[in-house]
Image 1 (cartoon, one colour):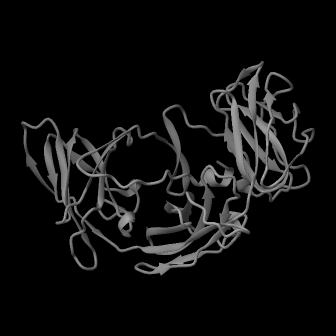
Image 2 (cartoon, rainbow, N blue to C red):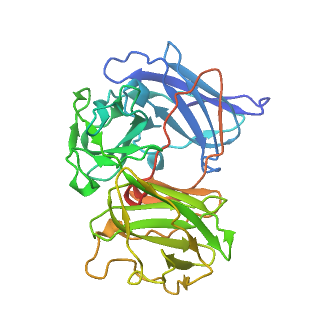
Amino acid sequence: MAIAPAAAQAAGSISGTVTDASTAEPIEGLEVCAYPLSEEWETWICEETDASGEYTIGELDPDEYAVEFWGRPLNYVPQFFDGKEGWWEADPVLVGAFDVTEIDAEMVVGGRVEGTVEEAGTGNPLEEVLVCAWTISSEEFGGCTESDSLGEYALKGMAAGAYEIEFWPLGQNYQPQWYDHRSHWWESDPVVVTLGAVETGIEADLLPAAGVEGQVRLGGSPVEEAEVCAWSTDPEGAIRCALSGADGRYAINGLPGDEYKVEFFDYVTESIQFWDHKATWEEANPLSLIAGNTTTGIDADLGSNATPVIPRPVVTPPTATPPVVAKPHRKRCKKGFRKKRVHGKVRCVKKRRKHRHHHHQIHNRPAIPSRATFRFGR
């Protein structure tokens, strides 16, 4: 690393060259981002490499930075400086009122997974279905993309390994699916990815889903950010959760047709209620949901028959125990933080609030739901 003093500058920069690890040829159009470590990624700046594979990220305040080389859109495996797989391993780059050079990267061509997403029964293509990959061995994030107007998708820049592939409809009332046509993540068939190779024919046909909607109130007033969960009475059935909005209203979609017990939990008062104004799982009335239909009016007033959680009762069917992943997840991140899977564990990290970039159009990346989100519902 070479550092050139420039005392007159109020800010510094990071620059370097990005090349193909196999050919040593420069890579054009690859996004490079600098994340200030002291701000826990609250602000970050990105640039793209030019025809010579060179980039410069300027206007950097004095700090230590994690530098990411986001290669997925160009089918390169992402990496952090210096050749590290994850940000938690990244070598920090110290920037003062000077320019830091030779922050280079040699990118490895990744594997690809391709296929189509259709509506079951009709074969109609489904657009804007989120397709995500997770490594089976360590549950690390392997990339996300969305299906296009033809229902086609391509996951790029994947590291070698075996993956679970998930198909999650965004704002559409279809049931999520795991490859190969599986209802649960633990049933999914592995997709083995090889560097430089394309794995085709990884398809999904999504079934219509049931939905449930309603409003959460407390003494007649709307409750914001109350957690509402629909629990199948089958221990191995579906579980989906949602948070109520400012008006107290919530919507849970993507449910298979089945019988459910709907639970309402208020984080402020730490009280529970089940539909229809029942205090416990045993008393709760099951609700029959039909695939393709949305049941409305499933409301709760937590000022009536709500049970304080000291301690919180175990919300499981009395005759069987659901899998470990199907337990309620109550840990919340404090304001300004969000859940993120870090090295195989869900932790609270500070939200990114600003994304400053210059001169280039940055590649759009879909929001990445955490692993816990997929397992406990959206």
